[in-house]
Image (cartoon, rainbow, N blue to C red; front, side, top):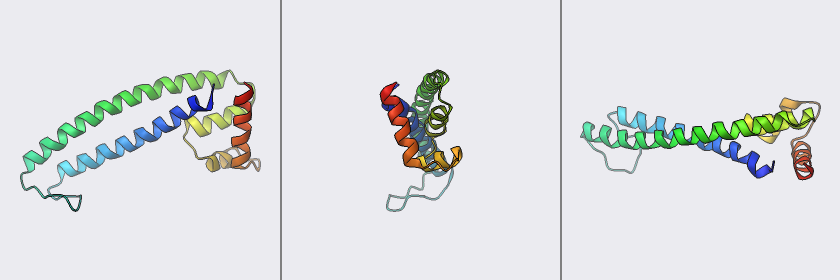
Amino acid sequence: MKSKNLSKLYYLRKDIEHQQSRIKELEAMASSSTSKITGLPHSTDISNKVEKYASQIADLKIELDIKLSKCLDELKNISEYINSIDDPLIRQIISYRFISCFSWEKTARSIGGNNKAESLRKKLYRYLKVH
């Protein structure tokens, strides 16, 4: 498996988090009677505001469902790949970094053993280059 394939899940999960945050923000804006965004025109017609946001929220939720489905497919592929790896350290690195979406620093702290983020990153990429 290439690092590009592993990174797909990482960035897809980050994108999902952003999408969920955007949905929550729109839901809050739709349910409040005051405008949350400064610099935009203020509407006093609450039903129009709810209607407008409801359609945007529905579109974002459809996109989110598609991304979640892709995420599950990627997760399955990576999990199968991890199970085929003999080296337990490499399995841990991939699991923390790409499945749990940890930063390299957090991955190093989670693995412990005085491992440094940069050394774990290099170890993984050397492994992927050979295998």
